[in-house]
Structures are given as structure tokens and as C-alpha cells.
Amino acid sequence: MAKKKPDAEEITPRQRRIADLRVSGRTFEEIAAEVGISPEKAHAEAGRVFASLVGEDAATIRTQSELRLDNVLVHANRDLRGASTQSERSTLYGIILRAESQRAMLLGLSLKRADQ
Image 1 (cartoon, one colour):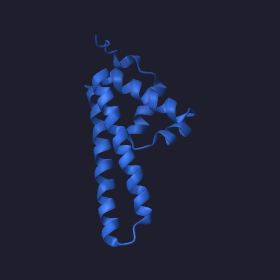
Image 2: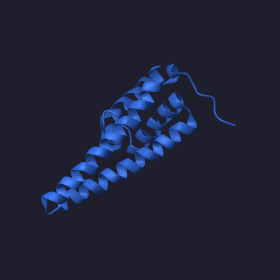
Image 3: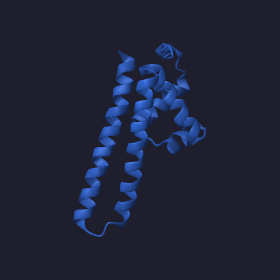
């Protein structure tokens, strides 16, 4: 049986801050440092926020997609440092731009649904 979706009012101010920081593009490591918690706790808190806003199933899909996009970004940024030609750099910049855009859209849609 699916969990009951809590009201948006049940989200704590810290959880909302974590969600806002994530939507602005901060990594879980950056959020953890700013809020004073571990990166794992930041990830868990962000997951709770999105689960409460959009339901468990949607939050699980969003989290999996977000983790995949983060993985793409990590690898593309690493490869960018070793790129030897302008063509390689241009391709990697395009990958990074698309992944950042998709992550922002994914996270923004989650918060937009909560505000409705």
C-alpha cells in the first residue's frame, strides 16, 4: 500500500532550505557543509522533502534520475580536465550543459508541484 502523502506544511525549515539549495544546483557535499550535516543526511533529507511533496513513487524516480545525472556530471567534468582538443572540450561542455539543465528541470518540477 502506498504511503499517505504528508502536507507540505510538515516540511521543516531545514528541509526546505536543503531542497532550495539542491534546486539551485548545489551538490550534497556543498549542502552538507552549509547546513552542518553529512552529505548522506543531506541526500536523505532532500529525498524526504520530495517524497512528501510528490509522493514516494515519484520521489524514487526523481532520486534515481538525479543520481544518474550527477554521475554524468562527475565523469564529464573529469574528462573535461583531460580533454586535449577543442572538439573534445566542446562535446563535453554540451554534455555538462544538458545534464545541468535536465537536473534543474527535474528538481524545479518537483518543487513547482508542491507550490500548486
